Figure 1 (cartoon, rainbow, N blue to C red):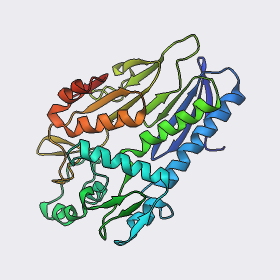
Figure 2 (figure 1 turned 120 degrees about the horizontal axis):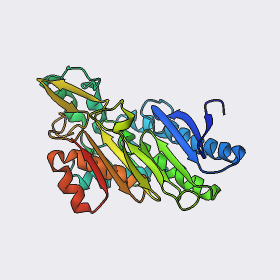
Figure 3 (figure 1 turned 180 degrees about the vertical axis):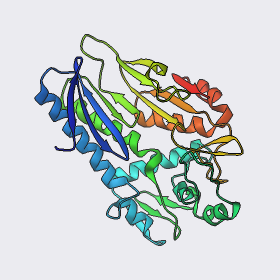
Length: 297
């Protein structure tokens, strides 16, 4: 596959490619290049398949079919239904602050580091289109009100990590680490029962390698949510890209970065999102969940 770069570094092969709007890499702890290349190609194909199926930027997938239904019910396949069930669960766990219909708010917000904040009138026009509670979801049928949309961006990347990791585990005993845009999982410990070493960017020094915190991961996954590159500044206050779908405004007191370790990336991502949505209560929430976590403010 021409879109994959495979390089040997130290004692692992690293395959690099782009998917889901960002850089992805798969590390394979194996000697033979042909084995590493085959595994990386399968992981990349998995990522591209999921991106093609669930991206909101395509006009030829199930998300487009749902978003263009104009109030009609749409019957979905089992994989899509599983994601909708998960989104419904997180919506309930968050008390409504996680909402896959809130993507329309991005029409008003541009989190590019600038200072533009939408007017109340702009948000008032969009808020009637937000609200998972307005959707009619009875597996396998989903009905949205006209002009409402869904967006799997809050869970799709973590789901792709888990699917690629499961695929590689079934194909080979070679230890692998799957990293899609900073959300990652490992198939098993490295050879010699060594843990994988993973770095978390220091949000106060994002360009400095020495500012990275190193975490050892022998199993499971890590997910990170933060505002290092996606924020606006208004009246001297930094506002995160994490939006409260009920108000249309960024969550107040959100951490700069939240990283959570969990058995799989989907659950780790859910916990990072819920923590970010808690604002100043992120630490207390994650402590109550009893998970390893790292928060930067």
